Length: 97
Image: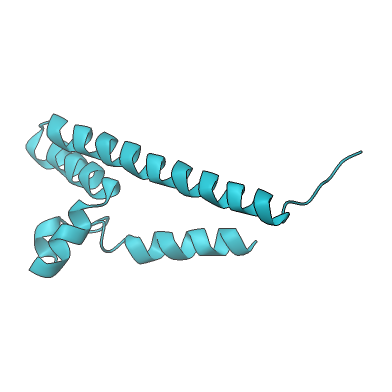
């Protein structure tokens, strides 16, 4: 339950920065680099281009995929480091028969 509440908190905290409700241009200039570092910003901006300009932005799509791959690699790396650390400390619970 704790992880679920953390996930929802992060989602709602990132929604305004990832421009779910408005384009990136409405953000202050100092927030633009943060917004463009999130994959969902590219998705929402790409969907705005489809809806309003009738153009599929391949560059936005590829940027979102690339950022997803980077964040996935970082997440996997952090998981394996934490798992290895937990194994060394004996913090893993043994369950089953």
